[in-house]
Length: 364
Image (cartoon, rainbow, N blue to C red; front, side, top):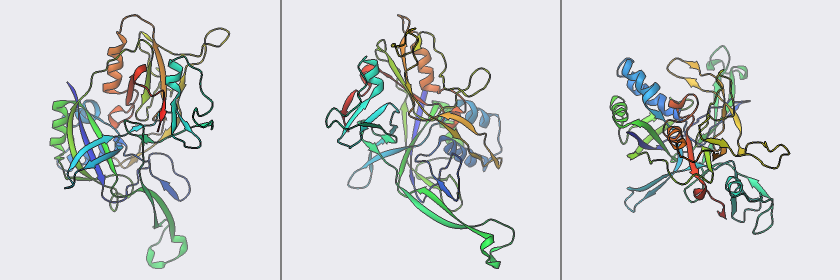
């Protein structure tokens, strides 16, 4: 049975998680902890105790997915004990909010599924609507990650610091995640495989791992909670339409391994399309973006491949073409195992929602 071990971390010092190309002398951190960094830290704990074997390869390459660590909201009691943890989700690319921030938010995906006309202004104050990005809780309230600017001097040429010449040193800045920020990341797989991986890594409450750039002097994450949760079954009435939202970046390729923005085909589902074209074959209704993803393999001391990925929060709309619900089984596979390449590193995580579960219009 597919389960998840939900791990919540707290930053103990500044963390720089840069997974995209940098320019100039400033490196900007991502506002989340990539699953590939958590996966690498767990693998490193195991490899410091034993050499890799077949079980190690199976767990990390096939059996267990390390999801991204999203910013989380941690509630504590008067005595400091944790009373609740909520993992945030990416704001969908189809979301629009009032430009004057009066509190109105609408979801264009839901409006389209209801066959309504897309609004071009706020219904409350008449201001233009704008796209928004970031993270939100289950009620749509924004969840933000605090960052800080770090400056350091680095040796960039031959020689040593004892010469003290300006040509030997360069000033670099890191925009880092601040101390005290919390992130929640599920490990997904069969229950026995999850327990075995955590046992091999000797990973428990209160342990710390080092991640990100310059991890010898910064990049500390401390485990403050580990919880076990089942995977909720996929259900609901999706006959009126459904929406697939990417919870993480997704690397999708076609049969010739070329990057594509098309999600895998599912029998019984088709893209919802614009119907106002003369020939009736309109464009698919979707809100998406792409980005370049790179990284560093610390174990091999080599850069990871640079891939083009669909951005988190990208939204795709579908409709059922068959009367039966056989497509639900394949959708459940998307939900449990993810889609695309590098899924064990947290890429390709999706959320599937039926029409009644999607925000139509409200205040935020």
